[in-house]
Length: 143
Image (cartoon, rainbow, N blue to C red):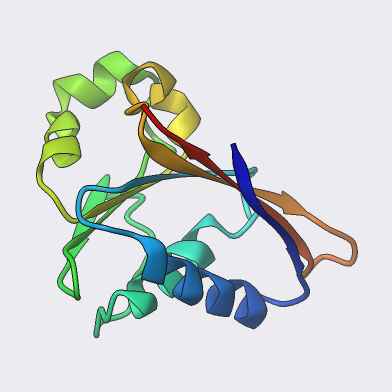
């Protein structure tokens, strides 16, 4: 079910929205961040981190697969750009993050679609016009 649709006009506005969005996240939530390269998935992750009280800068974990942060709840931020499929995700042992509590944010979540929990948020980012606009659609999936 779509729970929110909005249009932001700058990186700052997108990050501020994500900071507010973080307030609804609860222990064990998964947020699948979807969108083309450069759509703003890491911007969303930064804002969610700030909303969770993470003190350090949330950065893209492209070369680490997952970075962990401490805040109101633990934040696990995955970037699956270099993952080919669900089998590789499992082979790397990354599925453990579904069971660690905290918040699990997953960039390029479509690469592990078959492993995503039924209870999750999908956050779709689409490029708007001009280039700094983002159309954000949040869908809540439930059991």
